[in-house]
Every structure is written in structure tokens, then in C-alpha cells.
Image (cartoon, rainbow, N blue to C red; front, side, top):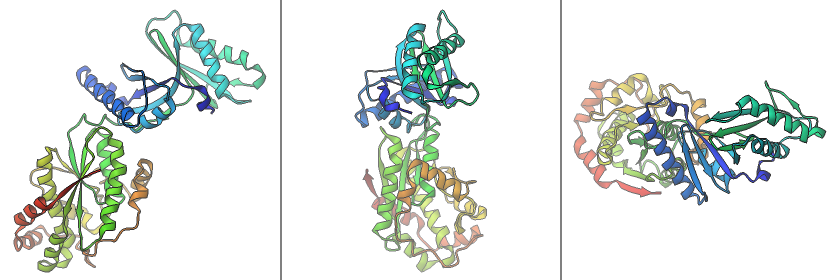
Length: 396
């Protein structure tokens, strides 16, 4: 399609279906948040616009940079799809002329096409009238191209939206991020390792409207700077989906905790003790951030510490906040597909040193009593306090 030659002057921004089924007060609140998020993205990327018209289920953006705006706004949660469009009046003759013009730029010789019309408001014609007249005009003006109408499986669909005294004509529909507008749900903290799984868990949580605050545990000297650099690179990509929200990562020194576990406890419990300590520190940060929960990238059976039995043992360390695991039932291929889609995959597979504290034979069915006895030999509260006091905040 020759979209770039059309000089589109508008973008149709369609809301996710879940927004439309909310009660009126909630829907208006979600739509206002979505509008604010859209404006933040446009401002962030320096995209000029004249106005944004909010209608039920839609935003109509007037901009000379419709193609770029569509691409950028496709990453806004709560947007189901977008279309660069040409605006005209709601007069049937103007709609027909503008549609035929766009068809001339979009259709190729021998193409089949269909016309679809969505109409809101009072007009002296029906949606079927619009489709019929536009189709007739296209066949007449482009009679030498061998075009044909195919309502079932066309090569090209021409879309028309009529809203009161305005109409918008388009030929492409771009997929949006979907979900709920970011900021319509409470904030959560997320354990971000820099691997493939945890950023996907963060993104899925963001898709449900929750702003995220990533927490990275620095295992130096059991890892090195490459691991931290990878995690921050992943966080930068991830937080590009959160324009207008704070972009910061809590970096928590965790190597000393690991050293104590390895020195004073059974080696096979190291990963369990490590993750339980992470949960405790994450709870403190959640308190600081006034968050409502802790998100992790754990999936059943993904690692030795993530057997269903071990996950129960891990969860018992968190006493104030729930642990949310968006990937619990995902397999690795499903997670990787999302990672590629959202852009974190390449950052996650950067070469980095693995954690040298991982035992050769980690426990897969830890006994809670044994874990608690091991922790009883340590001053857990002091370790948590030291971790919190020595953390640093990295603004991206």
C-alpha cells in the first residue's frame, strides 16, 4: 500500500474493548487517562498536532505526522488499533470523493476491494448507502485497473468512519497494545533480573494498567558489571512503554546476602534463601513506593526454585504484600514470543556473567521447616535493613 503518498491528516485511535464495557463513571476515567497518556507520548516524541477529539470509544487526532503518530501510539496501553486517515465533511459527496482519491493511491491493478462504513449521528443516508456509492465511484474512476468487489476476502479494505459532521477515510488498521490504560490500576514493584522472563511479566502487568517499579538485585561478586548493565538495558526498553511515568530502577546490593547464605547454610538451599530475601526487600520498597504488590517472572518448573512446591515456600516469606506471577502457566516459547514483540528480547540475550552462587544440586522440594531453621541461624532483619539502606536508585 502506498500509504506515505496519501498525506494523511488524522489518526483514528480505537479504545480497547474492555474500556467500553465499564460503567459510565469508570469508562470516562479510563478514557481521560488514555487521552493523557496519548498526549504524553506525542509530546515525548515531538509529534505536532492541532487537536485531539474524544468521542466514546475513539480519539480522533489531527496531525500532519499521522504515520509517525500511529506508530508511536500503537505502544500505548488501552489502544486496540489505529488508522492513519484523511478527514472530510459528512456530506455524502465529499465522502465519496475522498474515498475514491484514497483508493487511487492504495489499490493496484487487478485488486479486489471492499468498503466498510461505521456511522454515528443523524445523516440523510445509511452506512450501506455510503458503501454502495463509494464502491460505484471507485469502479467508475479506476475502470482501467480491472478492479473487482469482494466482500468476503478482499485484497484491500477501505474504511470510513462518519462522526456527526465529520468523516474519516482510511485503508490500513495498525494493531495497538490493547489492555487497560497505564495508571488506571495501582502501582506494583517488579523483580527484574534482566533475563527473558521478568521483563515480560512486568509488561503484562503494565498491560493491565499497573505502573511498575523495577527492582534489580546486584549479586556482585557472584556476577559482574555486565549483568547489571544488561538489566538496566532491559529496563530502558521496558519503560519505553511507560512514557509519562517515572523511569527509575532500584538497584539492591545482594552479594553479601548470598555470601552469608553460602557460608552459614546448606548450599542446596541457596536459591530458596536468595529469593525469599528478595521478597522481603521488595516488600520494604513496596512500602516506600506505596505499591500494592510484587510481580515476578516465575513460571511453574522454569527453574529448580520454581517448582510448585518451592513457590509455596518462597511465597511464605512475603507477609505484607501479595506475589503476582503473570507467567505462571507460560512455557518458554510463549514468553519469548512476547519478549520479541515488546522489544526486550535482544537486550535480555546480551552476554552477561551468570550467577556463580547457584548450587550444583539446588533443592526442588524444599521443606519450609528446614528453610526457616536455616534462616534462624542468620539475622534476617539486619540483612534486610542493610540491603535497603545500601540500595541506589537509577534514573533512566
